[in-house]
Length: 238
Image 1: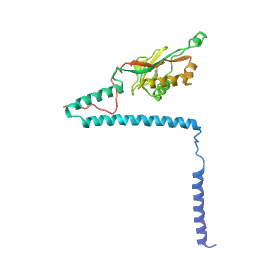
Image 2: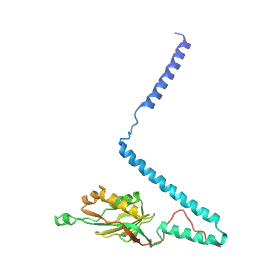
Image 3: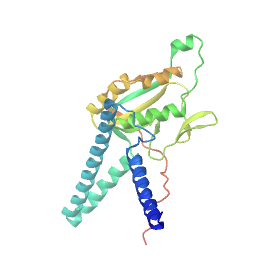
Image 4: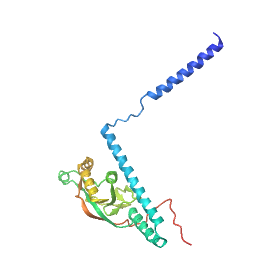
């Protein structure tokens, strides 16, 4: 057979094989399939919409601050700056705050105690999961056993004790205060925690998670330490 013909057949075969391989990779099923049903997908979409709405609200709030700086006279800029600083301190946890919310109590399940079950303190993992659930349902400020939760808060085990901000919490009857944006959101958080199977995780550890009724006034103390940061450096005035 002519060498040119062989070469052409080889090139055509290579191209056809490459096209088949590309088509196979295009239509084959992914290695990790999304097995969520439509209801779970709707829930995930709802959570993303909540995050989107929260981000839009934050953007609008920041735009409002910018507009205040632009529209105010020079002599009023000090007041605007002061209000901004106070707001940032509150968001960072450096100020005492009062607002609508709920109080949660974690205590030993007495019926299990009476039956001879041993009661261990709440684990850091379980407490961390609870904080995440509260944040997911728009808990704005949190205090655990008198310790304000801020962005630098660590919940961990130190020498066998569960600690918040490096301070050991009570081994039983731990009180958690939560403040939300509004009384309606406090009601929603209360309803969610009351019907959630998440409470079963506490009962498995021989603990009761008691969700208090929504309150119009809950007070949370300020973070009583200096906030640490790795990236911001205070510029001293000359």
